[in-house]
Length: 604
Image (cartoon, rainbow, N blue to C red; front, side):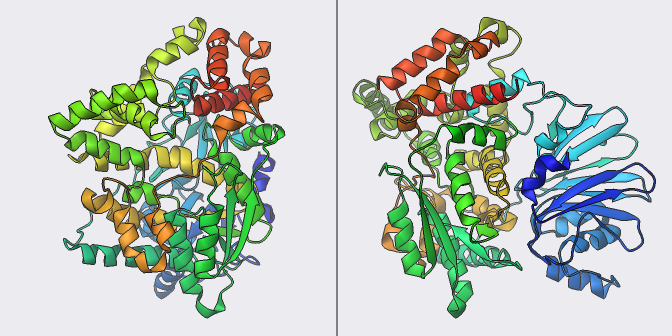
């Protein structure tokens, strides 16, 4: 089982077998803090508790001082031992003291109890499977599936959710019998598996009323978050996308480095100018004086697809995973830790869909009629390209008559319920509820207690899209090459501040993250500061018409796939033909289908 996740920790392997014969743990270590010491699994001096810990505790030095003042004696210089002493004094309440990204297991031999916990936002994964008389757990499902009592039987409900939103939400798993511990939660196991208990949800922050004071607070909080994530005994770098969030992180990091310099930045780019941000990233790198490296991702090799599929435990439809993986691989040749801008969009309202939901919830009847009319015209004349402004207008106008939760799922989905009925084989569709994914999505949206629809959408993403898509992508891609990725914008205090700020301070009529632009105006070139949201997208539509066209047809129209009776072959063929002929842009849909088909094929 441990060998299946050796890539996550290539520096060292350790094992623990409890003297009572109840617990066994294997661990592969990526040595970042106290590389020469802090071996894992680590057992306390009295032999009562043992921890296996993936991640980093950013405030471990402050906690160490507090614990030492209370009589704790430390044998190592790292953050792992802090967990043992903190658990001994605080038990489960220790989680409130931790600032970091983590998934850990603590075995308490005195109590005969296992304690599993995961960080607040879900930066680090923790999978588990409750079986008769036992529980098994791991950082990735591929380790669990090596256990002789588990099988890789796909879960049809999870596949339906995947086809709707492009990933398998943490409420579900692609494998029957396997589960994921949710972010901000813990689980205790003794003779039985206890309930999942949430220990964190975003709290409201008393934000100042004046814009200048708001900017100052945002700047101070971001700066502290970046500086806290510089704790390391090995070299660090920054993945610089050319967007504002990673540019701010890089600028603050470079400022913290001061005259010593030495900050390294890494950027991925494409020949397609619509997706290439190398020039903007290079401008930012020059502005702050970093040692900058560029990677050109062209052409795409079909063989990369199976490498990507094998990397992820579940089918994963986010096409930017490929670029993330390749830039991580390039960065790993130079550094062992990178900082990224993940989380800035969710916390500070960066996505265009937030502006759309804000406009939909505040417009008057005349504006509504005007947009509906313009949208109907755009449906006819707009080019078949999802990034085209007229196409986006048509999509926005089409969603307006529906409740806000339904509008939001329409912005996010790949296939709606009616489209799934046309796509899925009748035999497969018979055993599932194609409406369930949309209900799940809308229920999550409606669950958040706020009258502000944009804030509701932000919170929805923080509970779903962020941990189940973006952070799965970041963790899996980076750890596949033994690279630790840290996201200052995911500091829970910064997320709480971002959610608490007035929507007007975050989302304008033309762009989002207004407060971030103003707070760091003096540290960013005008081109970076004024740029709209582009996202770390890849030219997937063109890839599927050119480099991957043959692979796409061979995979999705393969007889072996047809025999699985999941898709109607003629429906898939129609999607491919429409896309190839330019009559529609099915790029994201076909990529998701391609990933699913190859994931199924790799499992026999």
